[in-house]
Length: 194
Image 1 (cartoon, rainbow, N blue to C red):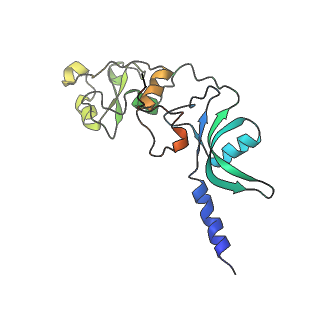
Image 2: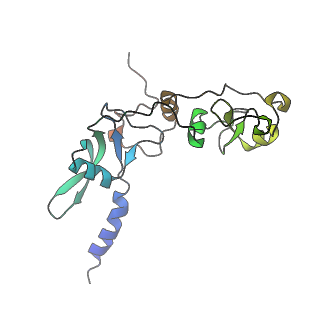
Image 3: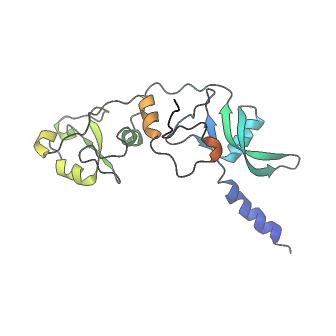
């Protein structure tokens, strides 16, 4: 039995899984920066076939059906504008993104937890204005005490971020993989020409 076909067939799907498509809203902006709005190549091809998106750029790789051959999309744009959420959801991830994955007491980066500025045991609530990202040592140091009794100080005020604020924070953390065809639509640390 010829196993060349079988080996290539088995290898190809994993190779193709590494070909995500950058998804742009109808205004040619990414739906989100962090996490970056990406679809699998299968979803991108299906949406293009259903005429829900336009293909802006393609990879060199192709996929085949019994009757057609299609280049894999690398950038797609939605035909209908998706209105962004009007306010940021209060989630652990969005909290860390607001605080740029930085301890709001000592400024360290890395493994983060969160801390209530006014401890819950003293009536503090779990809100944008009362919760900050904190490293474990600072969180343990503060414990269930008010900030003034712990010897710690906040680096900046805890505020409820806007969607735009979170998008701008997300631009500071580009993913490990960025395809060349995406650079015209992503503005990470791009210098503007005068």
